[in-house]
Amino acid sequence: MASIKKIEGKNGVSYKITVSCGYDVKGKKIIETATFKPDAGLTPKKMEKAAQDFAHEFESRVKSGAAMDGRKVTLQVFADRWIEEYAKPKLQPGTVRKYREELDDKILPAIGHYKLSEIKPHTVNAFFLSLAKDGARKDGKAGGYSKGSITKTRNVLSSILRTATEWEIIDRNPCDKVRVQAESTADKLKFFTPEQAAAFLQYIEQPYTVRVGGHTRIDDTGTPYTVGDYEITKNMQEQIKLLFNLAIYTGLRKGELLALKWSDIDFQRNVVQVSKAVAVVDGKQVCKTPKTKSSYRTVSFPQFLAARLKALQRSELAQRFRFGQDWQGEDWIFVQDNGKMMSYSTPYEAFQDAIRRYNDEKAAEDQLPLIPFHGLRHTSATLMIASRQDEKNRVKQTRPRANLDHDEHLCPRLAGKRPQSSGHYRKSTLKRGMSAKKSRSSSQIVAKWLFGTGSRFKAKRKSLDFQGFFMELLGGFEPPTSSLPRMRSTD
Image (cartoon, rainbow, N blue to C red; front, side):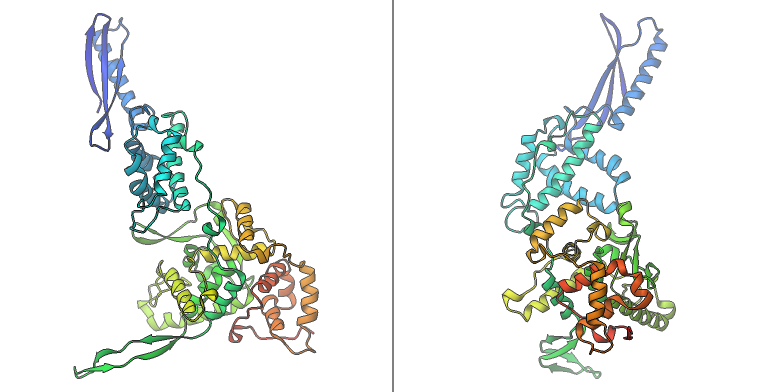
């Protein structure tokens, strides 16, 4: 509550209003003061009443930020208020958590003690340069932060200072005058080339061998015995294979994939409705609405995935029947053994394991890059760029045109490639690959697998261009024969 001190002097009566405004980084209380001089013609009681009204209004302005002075308020104090009064009401909980981490780990330890008015472009630039120096990282790794990480830090700081200008605490945003040097595209985006994507999709369909070292076991009688080295042949879970395939063919984010329910799949049109996403908030896995309205979308997927998804659905229904009342799921597509939603960390861990197993069998020049799971989204975008489809129809980014340029630069074999028109694929593919008089080659099977026949073929005319060219880029990769739909003659 504001304190009011009456001052009587030669010029009459005035009141000093004092409001506490938190503490700075050194624990010193921050005080905001104002002087109120009432009308000399008022009675003493009316003067006190006017002073109390002014004090109440002043305190409200201080608490709301309207009366904050950039010459007195530190970045530390303002950032705390920005989190509570701006970020939490307007941003997703996961985004607020990341912003808080950026503040606590990088920004506030370095410049939190500065008054807002003291933060100049040269101050910000020096701070960014310090983040790139060796020893700046808090995770113990050698070197400084990457330019991509520094750019994220800049975005957080700029958002805070931009709000300070909107609240008229400072005149301008010093971050507007500072630019972080752009990273090369190769450093910025991580993805598979078309050849690598095809190799990866083929590899995950094959069984793999795990070598187990010798160890001691105990039999049913309690007697220990030793087991020598041995090998186990395993197959990747079908739902994990489908997770990777959907990531590449649809460009969905990890959180969007994990949030899918069977009710989101339209098997008549081979499309999936994206209306939610999974995130980890305060250590808990939650399902939430997407970040933006543009994230609500309908995405198509190849016909062969529809057959495999149906098989997975039947398998999960059988498992659900076996579990009975112990089944804990909510119709999720990607699940744990008891039906609960798949853990948020599982896609990344399974993806990294698959890449490492693949690389263990290959020479260095043939190995796959160890990209993050989100790299499959960039892979999908890169493949679509080659078909000259509008990326915004499937992969929505903040600056889709810029991403198209970057991805094309990273995949030289795609530059200059142009897909045939839908009519060309319709005529040449059917004529060359779907004749009942000719033996069915692998290319014919793929054509059938992608496009179907009859009314389904006509209904999918608009997507033939992308699908056919996509498969061409993947080097004619075929799904397992067992997953293909039954073949029918087109005659």
